[in-house]
Length: 624
Image (cartoon, rainbow, N blue to C red):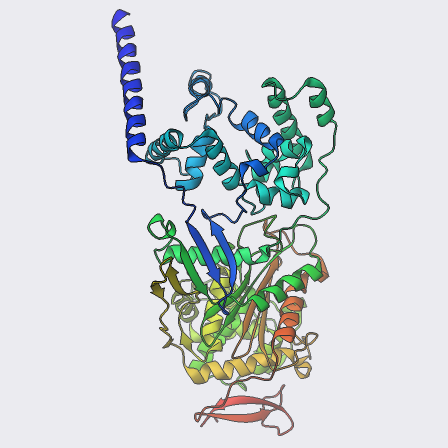
């Protein structure tokens, strides 16, 4: 027993000696870099700033003297009640956490102080590794040995996250209550202090009941720490949350989805690290604020109800620049970027890829297949019986032109099997999309995001020239030195003539002359100027891609939880938004030009025979 006590004593001596040594080292290293000069500025295609941040966060930095005393007391009471007495680590809290976590074997309990949280916000991520914890401990000691408690608390409340894309107490006060931080009442301040522990869980906008429960906990902590009297506690607990009628900031939060996309690209390029960020970065992008605002306004006008979500990308096929992006209907309520992270089934937006391969293998707009209910016998001794929309069939031969216009499934599967199913699989693989080599692939039974889908369509819309979609044009450091410049690396990876023929074929989706046994898919959505278009729909997803040589929009509408889209109005939202956007943003006619290898020939839209009064399509010279 005596030996055990001696070992415990040695451990304590070692621990406190090590801790004292750490304090001395932290003091000798000097005042920590608070990164107040650390910034990111994003510029649009007109070299105007559309987003800027300090310390990675977009909150307005405010002096602690300009913050309500109620909030300062509330945040200390609930997050770190011994803040003014400890030196960075709450040993009482640590002991309690050890007792809870180890002895009682309950759910993990932490004991992070405000100083530790501030160190994490400034320098670290939330990864749960020992190396991160050691770094956090050292930065905590640096902050405590060189800054006053007032300075630490000021830095913390200006950097902490309140949910809905909001950082810092000033922005949070404006967003939730429409007032400055120094004007917050006890009722308002205690609610905001409660949100910090779980912004998504305790947000009063997302769940008022949980927010009120959390606020009561904050008020009780203030009472226990003798910051308010019992009468004030009880009176405040009876008050309603008193939120602002509208929740918005001066800045346009719809741009934040694009901002997040830029930062992901910045990381891929190797510049999203402290070596560059601490000195400030000026990032010049392809962002088109007019396109973004038009998209955002149209989505607001539609007043998309409930849990229904949407995502859109706008790109320039001539340059492969990503010019606008919507990752959801409201960034404040969901920061999940569906445009680049939501993997969804693409449906009939697959078909143009299949028909590009067909045009490369001798097909032309007049190529015919019989359209009738068909069961296909496959090489693996199984069968496949696809169906057309509403089980409608021509019961005669139809042309490739009509198959594209009405999105005929039988024609697509026959084409797919005729070419060999591996061809479409390999085509997708060349763009980084892994798909199964099966018959249903022709109908879009593969998942990807609309960013990747736009990337392939831009290749076709550009006449076969390819480079991956991008947002960053150049990066300039704080000294004005260009440390990155985008280089045009477009290559001709698809046949130009096949792309041009396909682009012309995709205009047929608007043409009512094709509406016989099935309707042309876009006959009810007309554009002012010539546009190529393809839609895709499943029970759970609605997609559209529409473009001319200068602009390409790709849209998706659906539910995050993959529930069925039942409402008929919801099923056409993607079409409406995309076409409304193009009608606002396409200012004049712009279409592709024939090359010396192509002829323009008018054909009967149904039979495919030459007809001077028919629809003009493009054929390779020498086509019979």
